[in-house]
Length: 307
Image (tube, rainbow, N blue to C red; front, side, top):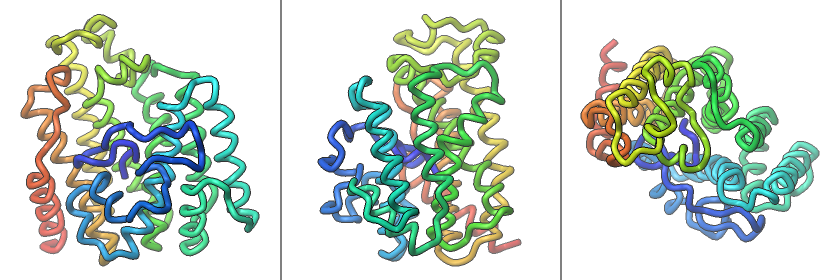
């Protein structure tokens, strides 16, 4: 339930490497139908999800290839082309729900999954809307505004995942939203310098002002103490959201439960890596080991069984 362009490692996400400037000629990870699903899993899935049966990995692979395509259009395509490319995606979504064949490989794949699992139109549209918004809005004044953005950029991925497991319900979706927003915020905490270099600031302006941070701090070679304070503040908020969403584990069965535990574990393990690295996000991208993430997943599943 991470932003798919960074879903890897185990909190999020792998590199924004796959370009989408030429729809239909996508690189691995964005929607190449010839790419084995196992490769997508290796590149993008937390280690705990690799034990899922092939049918779930294929469906989740389609979800992430779709979401990555949208992210890569917004991040990698020439700026003048992005609106046109988003329009192509929107037209293919129209085709999916009109019962006709989409043109883009990633849309053909997610279209098959949508028909099989009854995925609604809204989460697919919201991911496009979030990336269109990224082209216009580059900073968020308050925590509340950032959460509203995450409702478009992250929460729909969780909705799609729940539908893949035929487990979507209003109660589960509400809990999933807490987890997905948390994972998106954690990614923003990890990627302060990278986002700033791209002209985007996802740490709320009110927090930056509170700690006395300037743009120079965001682009500095080292992480000033005041910026570490802002990152820690938002990491704490993300931890609270993960805790709020954790009851979702107990409301799922079978492989859905295992999968969501993997996402939750990735978030918690990454928060521990941020804290252990003293929130020095400019020195390196602080991330946990796969062993730590797997250990967190086993703890989550074990605690749930013990209840």
